Image (cartoon, rainbow, N blue to C red; front, side, top):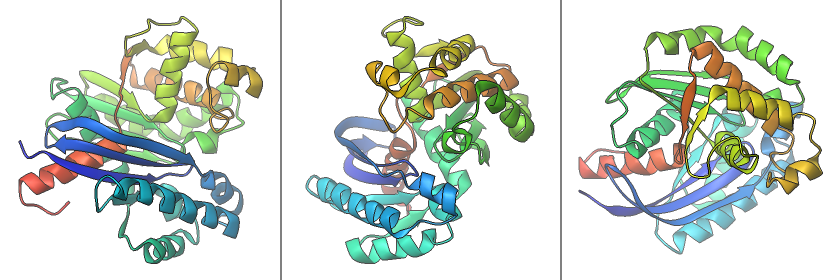
Length: 300
């Protein structure tokens, strides 16, 4: 195996996240640094259609801090920019400024990339023992759905991230997803996945809440669909203070209930009763992809 130490910085709509790890073409071997910073630029982009100066400065400062942390451990972080930079009117302009200020190349991902990388990560996490694998990511900005066996064969992305669903009741979340994503989920279901996994911070936070509320065991990573339904019912009326007492960060307090409703609806439309909540996601997928490119003499 071609093991190497690599770094990736993921520029999301709610958080920027850096990961440094020892990795080979089969997966992550040892995480050295896992650090995230809340930036909240997605809220500005949704409200204004662009990133105003304060949001741009938060983004530039956060990227600089994370690059300093990664460079102390390994040179040459791979920097990935996600959908908020595609959709904001000045998103590409901001990336150019960030690249110039910090002296790094920044990859602006396409929607299919944001599906491919999590799928690759989850496939590696399951050591390829998954058969036909479907991976669902309810992110802050979008809903990603991918399916495949040895390689990704289907990638679909919809503008149904939790920031866009924020403030909706569980019933309204269900109605919107049923209206806007039913065709995608029918296509995903037609692949007859043998394993269904969910990933991203919302899903992992909900797994932690299910454990704290005794809706599942303390170590298992599989959740029944009905658990997401119960979480949506319980979390929707909770105050920020009550959510904080359960360990929900302020940045997720106004989206976690709609995230539970979204996952419940997605799984219902997919006809899935039990899912695996993955530890890994886009960052891990990017590192594995880079390791494979290095091992086989390709360009990441």
